Image (tube, rainbow, N blue to C red; front, side, top):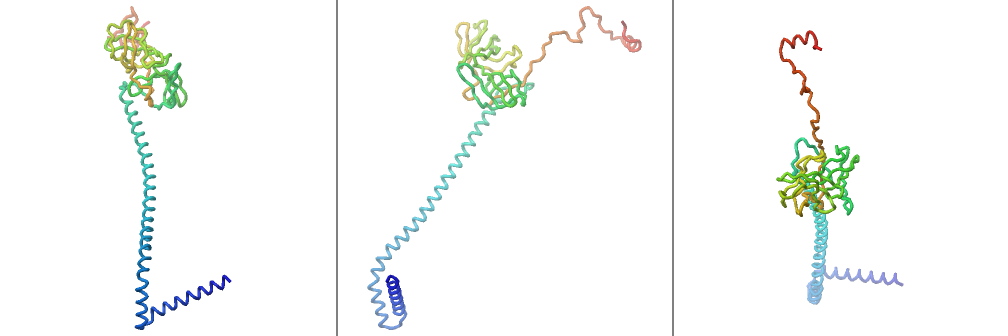
Length: 298
């Protein structure tokens, strides 16, 4: 039944199509009048249908444009995210470069070598303050070597591995650094006490010491090179004083571990200096010639 209905509908549509085609193609005045009358009747309906169709076509074009703009906006957002990542990386590299350049602010003697490392761990606490750096024995780091940053002395190496080293900070309670105060030249020992401003011990007098005086290493004991910047006198209370450190441990990221050895002291007379009571050498040419031929005299 359904198949028969479909056949009848298709046949009817075919006949209507053929009739319309014939009606449109026949060249006859009466047929032409019929076509024009049909067009006059159908024109309002065509206009009524054409306007929504045109609006629908415009809406479709606008939707396509909106979809393209949305896709472009999504791609631009991804590009902005990538550019922000590059910007953050560039800013981090710029800050790292600035911190590395700041290490050059500490003026070292040409005789002092160094190895630059990055702080990879901070072992700060109430009973111990130290930092772990990513340089060690293979970089020439030795136990007891001084460590500096761009502002001044940071501490000293207390443990050396093949590729890492531990730096004991000046604020650690077990830290002891011989220092001198400028311009008075007073000598003391900087003692860490887990505070931001370590105290000066063994200070003979404070009459010629003032707040703001510069504190540098004295070089006594041969552990630290002399004249490394430590900080400034921050407070004086009687015969006690405290030092505000030049190094900022909150921003400590890179350090230089110094390769320095103290010069050997002259604790014995040189071989060119004759012992007391010894006869001086003769510079007489004849005596020298005789000594070459006869050998040294007993």
